[in-house]
Image (cartoon, rainbow, N blue to C red; front, side, top):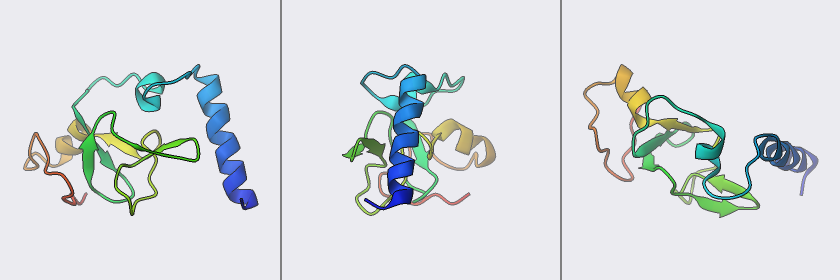
Length: 101
C-alpha cells in the first residue's frame, strides 16, 4: 500500500471512529440530512444508486459501480439536492445513467 493510500485509509478509519460508527451504512450514521431520498448521486462517476448500496473495498464503502473510485460517505450526494438545481431530472433516476451537473 502506498503512503498516500495508507494515510487516506487511516484518516477514514479515524473519521469513522470519531463519528461513533460501529457498522451498518456509514453515510447514514455520520450525516443527518434534512432531505432524504432513496438515491445518492456519485460525485466521481455522475451516476446514481440506492441509498445503502455499496461495494466494500479495503474497509471503505465505495460507489457500487465497479469502475468508480467514489466513496459513499464523502462523494455520495443526496439525489434531492441534485434535483434542486435540475428539476428536469427524474424523481427516481435510471440505474447506470450519467447525470451531469
